[in-house]
Length: 126
Image 1 (tube, rainbow, N blue to C red):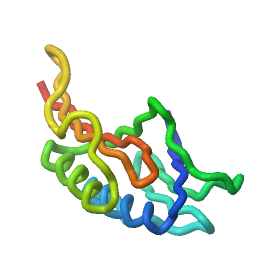
Image 2: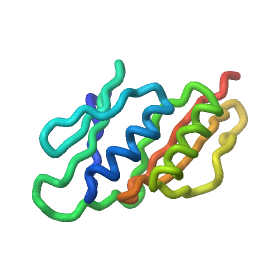
Image 3: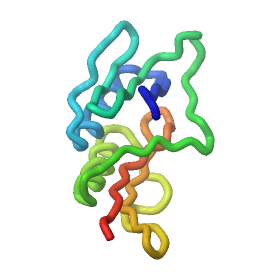
Image 4: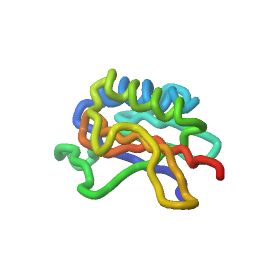
């Protein structure tokens, strides 16, 4: 459905270091620079970070979450730990199982240095 997701950042280098670390835990290589942006590519899509082109400050979307696929709970935990170690902050509940009968997910939420909410999600097989 999506070709890419782009988030704004006020401090591009700090954001690049954060995303190199967290996306690296999911098997995605370091960001590739293109002018004032970095792109992270995978077989299923592209994630980008940029300074806003209108010159205004970057801001996060209230109520927005970007969820990224994790292959296991351990990978989601590594994502979360890397994010906190590189300037992110934990949010919501600590990483763990959530869901309802028949649908179990392991979720690890955090905010990037600019306040964008991210989640590493592993769907637990039935």
